[in-house]
Every structure is written in structure tokens, then in C-alpha cells.
Length: 347
Ligand code: AMP
Ligand code: MG
Image (tube, rainbow, N blue to C red; front, side, top):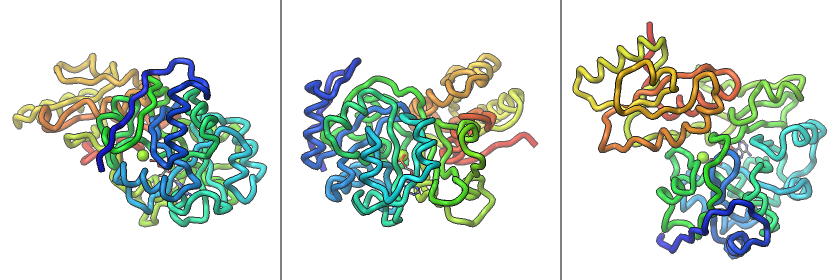
């Protein structure tokens, strides 16, 4: 697989009739795949109703075919076109959180291609809160299946250049909208059961959902400690891995410093991902700061960039701080637990 990947110049105030947007939409209608920014991470889009187009997403990413895709829409009519019914709870959630980082699982009416839904009978749908994503959706006038625009297993892309690093020569084009805002993927919420279930924590937090829903539970498979297969098939794969092994360090700042000292004593070259509070407290040159531990949305925003920052050739191990699992911290820690090769805890 090798093709010329088009890079359009960055669009600041995108409209559906901008030349770049029209060209990208035409590629989508020609069954090609095009990467575009959303408010969460960059997505890799294809016509969700066309099996052959969707197949190209799996090939470009190297994604396992049993991992279904999220369909992106620009209006409610497109949701209706994909689902058997929109239950009242869905209408309330859409009113409260769309456009935004909340994906809802509906019963599929079969309009989405079978490789989008992995034959589950359900379809995941969301409306992204990004002007360029919405302009592209309107120009193509099709629902777009769009997983994160990275090679499978790598950290999700939060800039157009991350997409280029992973997918140059493998996709038809990349729309550039600068850095994404949230930085982590959407929350996936299954509303096909009586009590809605969070299958993946993300930009809309459990606390946010509780302002609208009387009850919401977290998929027990997410919390670990159960043999049950995750309901969101994607959650079982290795994900978000940096090039060097990542150790997630849990404990006081003094414990982090001791762990660092032990690595150095073994002659290891260490990279560190830490909040600015921890970074200020330790003496080391290879530190990537990822915002304040008091503002976990900053950590979410910079996490994937930080995971991409260290190259295999430069460090032997990456030590990463652990964060509180409140608010968007739940999504941050979900991704870090999946990226980590090992957890180091203060006893
Ligand atoms: P990504 O597209 O890489 O952000 O991953 C999409 C996530 O949504 C994966 O974890 C999928 O397993 C999950 N997902 C997509 N469609 C469904 C569905 N119909 N039922 C349950 N989970 C889904
Ligand atoms: Mg992904």
C-alpha cells in the first residue's frame, strides 16, 4: 500500500464549501479515507455506509477487524438514518452533550456497513464538536466511520503531524485543524440496556453524565479484576503504547524520586512524563511536562503528545506519574493503564 497523501494547508475558519473541504469530501465519496481533526483526537474517516471504503480504514491502521468503529454525524437525521429508534434517554443525552465527546451505542438498522459494527447489531454514533469535522461531514453529506487516525497500538494523534508520522503514504489525505482540544477519545456509553453503561471513559465524565441520568454504571470489565470480556471490543487490545516501555509510578513524589534513582543506578536512560508540580520537585533533564495535576483536563490534552515524545533510541524506560481518577482523570488513567508495561507502587 503506497499512495500520495494530500496535506491541505491549515484551515482556521472552515466552511463546507472551502476548496480543501470539498476536495476531501470528494475523496470520501470516491471511497477513499481522509484524516480530519475533531475536538477529541484526529479521526480517520470513510463513508460509513460503504463496506469497501470502511475496509480501507482497517488496512491503513492495521486494525483488528473485530473492533467496531464510531460513526460521526453532523445532524439528528443522520442518527435516525442509522438506528432502529432513538430512545428518550438518547434524546436527553444528545441535547445535553452534543456536539461533544460522547458516543452513544444504539441498535443498528443495518444502514452502517457490517465492518463498521463488527456484526454486533449495534452502532456507535457521535457528533463531533469541531468546525472542520462538521464542515467535512456536511460537504460529504454522509455519516463517516472514523476511528483515531493512528497506526493500531500507537498513541492517538492530537496534531496533523502525528497523523502524518503514522499514516503518510497509506491514506488519501489529511485535513489540518491544528491541535485537538480534549486530547483523549470520546466517552462510549451503551444505552441499549436498562441502565446506561460506560464502556470507555472519555471527555464527558461519569459526573457529567450523572447530571442527566438517574443511574449510570461503569463496565465492570474496565475496572479490571474480572474475567468478563469487555463489551466494547476495542478495550481488550494493547493501546496507546509509546516506543519505550512505560512504567506507571504510583505513590508520593518522594517515591517517584526513589524509583528514578534506582533506574539511574542500573545505568538506564530515563524519560519522565510528569505534572509540572512533580517536574519542579525532581532533578532530571528528560522530562515532558503534561500540565498541572490540579487541572486534569490539561493532562488529558497533552498526554498523547507526551507518549509520542520519547523515541526508542533515546531512552530505556519512561516513568510516568499516576493521576487521581476523578473527572477526566478516569479517562487519563484508563489510557495510562493500557499504555503501561508495568506498574510500580509504593508499598
Ligand atoms: P476508536 O474508534 O479507536 O476510538 O475506538 C472506538 C471504540 O468504540 C472501541 O473501543 C470500540 O470497541 C467501541 N465501539 C464501537 N462500536 C461499538 C459498538 N457497537 N458496541 C460497543 N463498542 C463499540
Ligand atoms: Mg483508537
